[in-house]
Length: 378
Image (tube, rainbow, N blue to C red):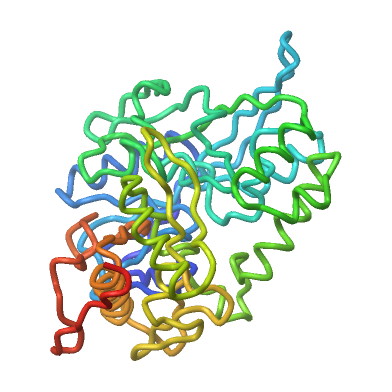
């Protein structure tokens, strides 16, 4: 177990942002994880579990507690009698390694999640998803440790309260640390995969009709790279948390209102997708662009990616405050124009622990000057 005192967290995140943690501990086994938790308990310090750092914004002022990085890397593939394969991966395994191997075996279930950065443990916490697939659909169980007493236990789907880009593990009150995840994958079904992607607006899949999981994976990776959504140390446009905001789900009448205005203004309908209970999922990226934010828009050290306006990047030694200010700017303008509040997808680690990102539509001013709503979209 490696313990580092007063350790900078910036290099452990894809945004390259983060202050000093009191302690940084790398745990290579479940026992070392329990030992790290015991240290935190003895010193009465808060704990934060940091995977690959791909969906977290860490306060530039630092974190007053202990950051634990799970480094367990075991993986087991177990064929089942029903034709499925169960894969059990430790929390520290990069998720894309599992997606790549699943596609090599021509297994379906997570092929559309290819290229998403982060660890297996983090993927479960976030309930990652793309093009109609989510971790919740393949999740079987997870092994976890309770923060308070270090007891091991098994988490089932009913324990996680799966929702869109959310689970019970993502809340500040969550007492569990995931040590491994088991997923159930079935042989790739080309017709179902192509139909699913087409239904979620992935036209390239519908046109290419990939007959293997590996072929679909390559198209997904090509698409993600074209949007700078695959991390590259040498490309500042990838130094983000991926999509900073979730796609909002709104009542049908709100979607109809915004779509009608889009037809008048843009002479074409807005991108949207059906959601549960008669609601509609809107494109956060489209809303951001319609609110006047172009790719590359910058505010102090933070900016929107040159390739995708849903990604906030660290362009010029940005601080967490720079990122929050840009996020607030976007939230405010989108709300004033559409009466739709964007919700951040990123986890925010403040000095004292996980808290809600301090920006919302309640703040109706940007840079001290009130913005006038666009009547076309109201």
